[in-house]
Length: 294
Length: 274
Image (tube, rainbow over all chains, first blue to last red; front, side):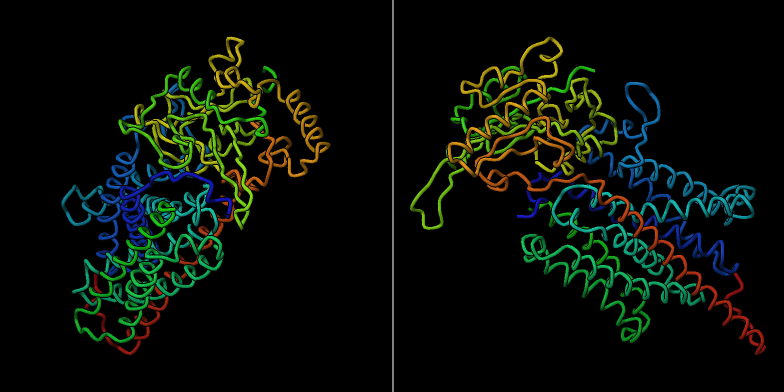
């Protein structure tokens, strides 16, 4: 029996599944918005604002989900501040510690961008639009984009930095979750803006298709890296079927096929986006709960 | 710092009396029931089944049959937190709740733990669980309170066969080596020590004399620290972030080139005026 099977399950279940999914979308959406702001055209601004509108609420929901998952939620602040000395609690080698600070940073920058976006459309004083424009805007977008990438990917690194079956038997989970966060972030942006046919939408569609292909490659490498001794008890069951059907077929292959053959007419783009989101969610479900079930 | 202290558990003399389990529960005031459920496993003589938040000592009853079931034997082992010199739980704990004491043992501070459960996923031996009464992670403290008062841990004091021996690690290692040689001389060639040297997680401060392979006792052959995956996993993710960023930039550049080409042909981009 592989060594990872002698361990106990931490019982990270649905709160964490939803956190991984929503955190990934929020991080991916902000990273895409930041790319559009920093390197795009003025015409890309509506979509980048949409990215900010997704990212900030996503960071709030992420924090709430993480707190709810704690067995002692009232002590959530122990993640950031040492309860005995009231000094900052930070361990760079503990993914949960780094992740707590990463989520805080992401929440901060996504809040600034959120305020900036509302100012840009006139809902808040115009002066605040400087948060996403000019030099300050560059700083907010660079730092927020980096923390967005971090938020999408560190969750997989966190799972690998354990001794549990599947999670600790591969080092590819962080990359897989990062790519999936990026693709689901793009999918939600597409779903919310599919009626317009701007160059930005075409860019998003292209990018999402490429990202899905990359996700498939990473998933195959991940499964190969795990090895049969672990795959057999963990994924050669209903979880494996769910992974093949829900993630590979529904969440990756069908959306790619729809990109190249838009058989559903005007509904092709939103349909593909919904499938990508469903696949991204099932990916978190399978990766988390299949190991928990061992 | 005081001298490193620990347990040497000689499974060859364990008789499965569970005095250690009872003494541990009594001293540490651990509930007999798990969240109100009456615990009877219905298998073997083992009604506690595992180490967890309310069972910090667990006597394993291993019924060992040959494949043709012509011969059988009982293997017994009083399992406990290993108090690893390189402790996985301590490594991942984000709150600093898990500390190393002056006795080189590993203790979870109950007033700090917030129940994130990363230590449960990290422990290669499956020692830690949430105590349902406190909702914090719990495990053997090696009777930290008794050690501070110069007393022997409750389980070692209660053990009637000296299967559980407590003392300075250096002394226990010598004793274990002598016992191993004695067993080998008596023809028990399968006898072996587990965790007595630095090959396993820098040394286990609760180490064992086993009568078969570690796997038979539910112990991992080569337990490792979770951090072994941290750098490669993080590096791959960072590389992925760069790749995705470049993918986005290439697309934006292509979009820009198309727009410029269209403008050169004298076509306006009405829909893309922003």
